[in-house]
Length: 360
Image (tube, rainbow, N blue to C red; front, side, top):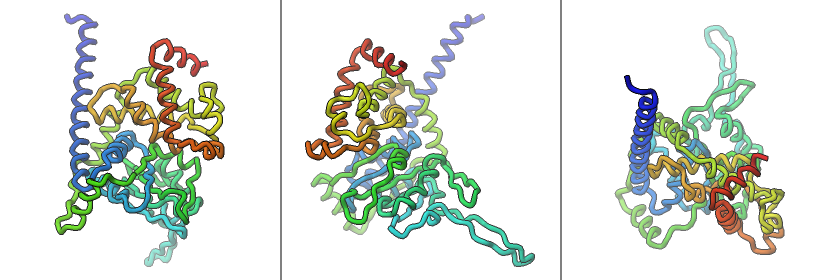
């Protein structure tokens, strides 16, 4: 009879082998999605990678950039590549909450004359919802997204209506310095997992964009995945291992953004109005797991944590007037926080001491 320890080891080996196979399939499938998107979108590799990370982690994204940088095209193409129902909402100053969530109408039964309310779903009922120029509508309408993003449901007339699964809100935002924009409330910003900055393309990429889009043969995006497969991949991502030391590293980065925290640097205490909350730590770790999965890795590494810090934190921090007078840039401040926390948690003893601080 086989010893119990041998059976346990074999079971663990089989489980590990199955997980590696699942990761291999995930990485290969998403490489196909990435390749398909590259036929439509020129350059912007970081943007595409961060969008895939958010989708694997089940998070929403905020894409920030000036008009004309293919933000809408990127999101629509991503939905096509994963065979997801796609809905586009153009946010305007006169848009009402019911235009997003849907509304109840009175319907009359002609045979009986009886009237009753019937719910007409709004464009929020889709797998991928593009909230285009979300900051061009007033806060009242922006708030209509809050329940949908957090609870995956909407409430109309006292009735709850679940949204389809998977469900992603991918919102585009023009720089808030432009005319006719309304800054998003902090509570809503926190619902976005990543803040993805879409910058101007390199010269060679821009030339390629011109050549591709002015010809007669425009490329079309072919489906590479289904929504069901994406849900299965999200389960694989959550099973990826992470150590306590890396979780501590991510948590210490988030805590170092808060001016009231003992670990905050003098610059943070002087220049930051408020820092990131606990949701930031969760999103950094979950995003790091998704990034590891994209690369076929069964474990999270420090570079995964570091790569997710900026897109997770930059919309969860606010600089004050002192920062403006000193010329402090948010991106540079976050980079310095990551570097400083990284130096302080290089060795196991420092990580353990940081972990004890968090537990106390």
